[in-house]
Length: 533
Image (cartoon, helix red, strand yellow):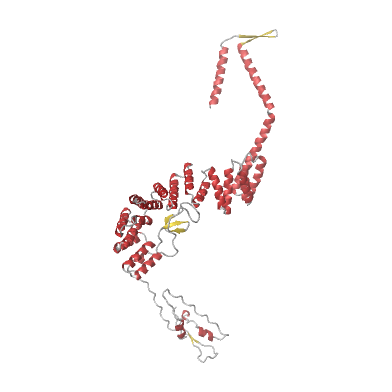
């Protein structure tokens, strides 16, 4: 737009100039070689402009003629480059689509038209074509060649990392990821792999620095970064709790500041404060975490904050927790445990039953069984409660990748992933869980009606003299096919070889409470048998 305006301004200025000359008549006289040339001023101006234009055109023609070899070569070079880039583009599309043959063909075509040092993508296309053809060794050689080029180094490290992961060589994969993370912390794949390596080796300070670098490059959100920092600081506090309590306390308090609702951080911070007799601050930390989400470990630490407290004091502290989080199963269970220690069985039973009504779980029934045994010693009721506990849903626990742990850990023992443990109920067992109607006091007990004895049955009479005659069967004409008596072992032995073999009756499955028949008693019975079903 500006160039158009400038052009218009120049044209307008030239028009004004010629108009000014036209309004002022005059003559211009030129004497050359004894001749005198006299023309008007306007003609002279037009002649000057024509001469300048002719000189410019002549110069342009001479310059074009002088540069014509370079222009022609550049034309063919650009045309060749365009064909090369077209082949490169087609090859990349073919590699993405999984067409290895076309990718290899376009790689060769692009390599002929474009030099690889001018376009590094040719090396990438060649490596991708090798991977599609199954030539992993050739692909690794290409990736290793990329390490010499600063522009392609990260791409080469990425390819070598993926190949190491494919081969299961985690050490090599983490080595390549570490080199890439040192060069570019914003790379997610490199940072995550390096973070797993650092946490696996227990280098919590190095992991914290890496998370800080991720946060500064805006690779992860602020909340996610604070969560990771809290986990790493808690892990650091756990590692230093015995060797350097002061450093562990600093790390735990920082973790609790970042995530006040994180139970492991609150627990270890409160534990370190209790060791230094700062009960008030430790209790405040636990109360804040309890209000966010009740947890059995928090309740245990809170009730045992002072080792010398009496059992009634612990019960009062448990009730204080219950006031902070009412109508919660963990609150009732905490009070029930403290009441059991204080021998207040009525309160313990009431709170345990309330916990069962709010959240039916295994631990509540086990606690109720402990209360029953401590108060009455009724082993029948204890066994009944234990039976319900076996079939009840499991208590929440720290679960990561299918592993159930009694205590929290910063990384998964299976995959090494950071912050993999979650506080939740493990996967339930197959089979029917406890139902609500089982607690009904007037539940009717199902009974099994005994079948009626058939009026007549088939009996095989054996020959008392032991003769070789075939025993005869006396069959009632009115009996059904289902009422046929089973053939005994003795009768089976008495059947002659040329007779039809009798199939022995299938042994009836025993009921769970059926003790069975003693073999000695069975031998003394008469061969005349009676079939129930």
